[in-house]
Image 1 (tube, rainbow, N blue to C red):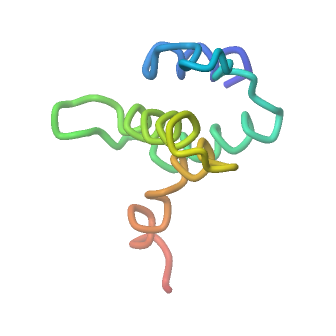
Image 2: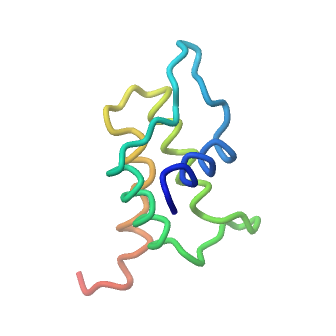
Length: 93
């Protein structure tokens, strides 16, 4: 996905687009776009119990951490928080 496509997906899943302080949510760097695409690929084919794509959960966690918890890399932490747990079975660790 290209940067604009990633931003649009995040907007669709995790509205609003501006927090209570007027902070814009969707100014993604090229590194963030690359990371999002990596995470999305890792979770390809995974769905929540209700049938929703798993990436939507990761988007919501990332936006929540980014907006409300004040983490410097909240969006990135949210996107990646299940990578090891969900993908560990594929690696001999």
